[in-house]
Image (spheres, rainbow, N blue to C red):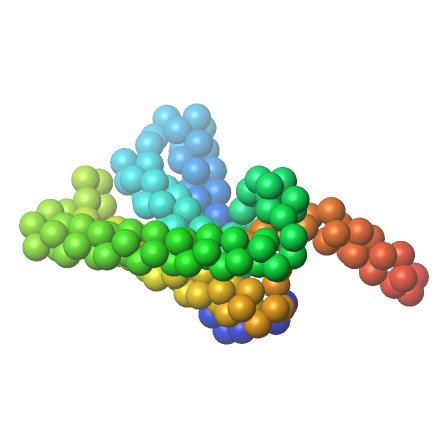
Length: 180
């Protein structure tokens, strides 16, 4: 699957969030055990970064087919019926993403209106919570893309076949020219 600028941005943000969480946690451990000092803000910032990782990661997982699922029943269905089930499931996922996006937008707006600051960082509480509607907007977009691929016949359903993907990767590796 071709990755556009949004996909690259998504991957970059996920990688950046993991790297920042690791760096901050490492700094906190070193400061605490070597210098008997603690960064007051480290836990809160790491928590905000982890929230960002989760809510950006859900859409990334849909894009690359990384979410787990039980498809034993769908595989037992005829291909046409399985495709209809996949379309209905994707539509339900779109409805879910839209509902949670709306609820998270209302939540962030209320936090904005209240105007409280984060506990240990000098930023308003609504800023790190913006990842909620952003994540669900991206999730809605990814399910929309999945629906288009399913309707056009380019994808069979919500889940990818990990075994087929592994066999394909193995064949590509074996057919690749030797390095060196």
